[in-house]
Length: 119
Image (cartoon, rainbow, N blue to C red; front, side, top):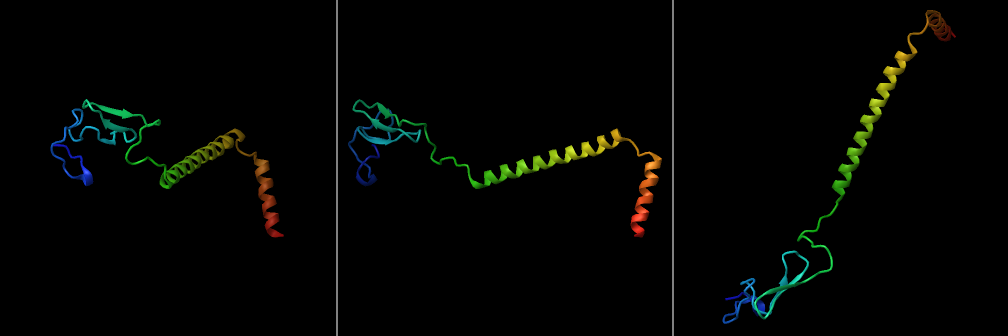
């Protein structure tokens, strides 16, 4: 018995497709690839006509808003980490390269600060 018939009723006395016993001879249905149409031929074999494109899943994949937000946040966090590392490197290495200020310059800077505060 095949499950082909008007309104989905079970049809008795119908020759089933040998390639897929769930379908009757001459019946057509959507193939498992989600794209092609399968047809049971008169000899019981199944023939599929190509759909002309890549097979599709029952649920098409979409690149939604959430994925875009996660990607953007990850990129922003990575940029912040890199910027922080560059700033730390500059602060540490440039301070060592310049060395300490000479004593006379320190005294002059302190004197200038005291005069500026007293104005």
